Image 1 (spheres, rainbow, N blue to C red):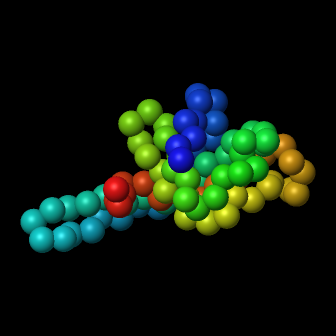
Image 2 (image 1 turned 135 degrees about the vertical axis):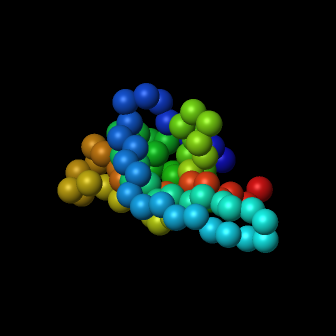
Length: 84
């Protein structure tokens, strides 16, 4: 399942690296994404992917409430190397 990220969400690149496999170089990055809480965001799990423009993010860990206050959810995600 995909969740399209609308403009105005905080998308913060944290780290990046390149992988060399055969004759290809693949880039991978870790990103922190913060979205506003909603009933739909409560259902997000590791099977979902997030999409912002042409970039697809794979969820790397469980979504976490910032300051335990059902306002903003922080999601750690990876981009670049996707299976499928």
